[in-house]
Amino acid sequence: MHTESVMKNATRTFFKSLFAVIGFAVGVLIVMVLFSLLFSSTAEKPHSTTLRVLPDDQWKISDFSREAPSILRINIDGVIGLDHIRKEDIMQQLIESQEGELKAGQVKGLLLYINTPGGTADDSDAIYRMIKEYKRRYKVPVVAYVDGMCASGGTYIACAADKVYATKDSLVGHVGVLLSPPFFNFTKLMDKLGIESKTFFAGKDKDAMNPFRPWQQGEGENYQRLVSYMYDRFKTIVSENRPKLTVEVLTEEGAQIYPAPVAKEKGYIDDEVNSIDELLAEFATELGIYEDYQFVALEKHDFFVDLFGVKAKALFSKDNEFRVRLPGDLHPDLYGKPLYLYHPYE
Image 1 (tube, rainbow, N blue to C red):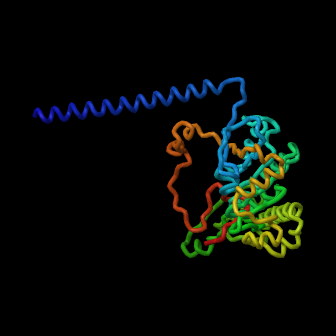
Image 2: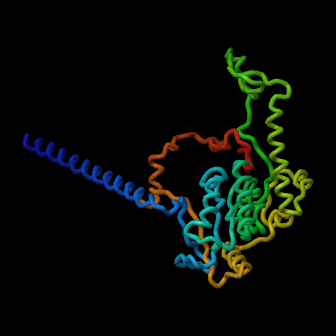
Image 3: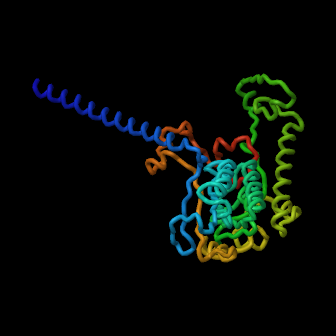
């Protein structure tokens, strides 16, 4: 009996201590959030990015200087339209490169780091136009460095650069447009199973490509017109910026992707390089800033990453979900959108 009483007291004490620690931790977190909000509510413009000094061509990381001429790295590393490669993210980096921790005019050149299969047509086109405008407005040269893949939307964005370089094992190209996912029609299967469906809609073609009824002659032509329009624009953008790749050549070749040596021969890239260090040294020399330049990036703020050093925010994200991804399956955010994306069906 005495032993049982001791166990109960020990258990009660343990849980009291545990909840006290949890309560204290929650309290500290709330105080830190309040302090963060308090100190960010100043007259100074808030910034959504954090500046990071990157290794230069000698693998040295210097202290940040507001006086040193800078080469700004813009990461196109992942699926365009996802992974912090949305048009809003790139726009914020470009804006804050002129009015954030970097002084106006401190950025002397942009280096686009590209390793992407492409992504949404909308984001690809917007990022291309933003970089073109930045180059025009601030008279800043732009080079693109491909390390891995520069397909479809990546090729589109690379056209904003004055020169495009790629490592020898990189893949480049794939000029084409995809509307995904593919459309299916289940009416024959439904007839066999004795299943009927009814869709309520208003407006001609509002239920176009409805998979639960027979398709009409010419149904879906509007979607094809949209895809063809975007394909024509894609070819025009490439041909305007890469002279060897005329509209006729692109139409004849189709959505092909090439290893760097072939991509250079065809005109997708200007040259091959061994590493980003080699390109950095060359670019800084051309800009006349090699002796004292710094290589920097502006990265998106994440309060939990800043606080804990890990992506703890993901634990509480509404985007968390368990989902079976089948071979060839796309991210849900890409469904129903025109895509400049390298996506071989598996």
